[in-house]
Image (cartoon, rainbow, N blue to C red; front, side, top):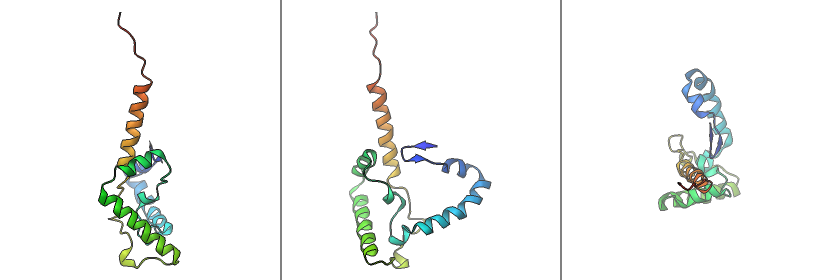
Length: 127
């Protein structure tokens, strides 16, 4: 439920088919209203970069992923300045909107938790 990116009810909703069928149309509507796909962005492009864990996760991206991310930002900025949406063939398709940054953020959070445990460990001397 709680992860490094905040509260998520997605595992509960995906596990229950009845709730999933009720929520999925609303989720699709919300994604369309948010409009980030119309600018060619992916969901993980919207994460707040000022967070330390996201900054470290961005450093772990491959060169290709980092280039694609910066290209998406430049293209979206240009479209925003011109007050237009991209042509429909350049919109991000739902199949392309994968969470490319989330695994890196989660691994950074796990490492931070592990470091916190090791840093606060009490060492006792055997007698």
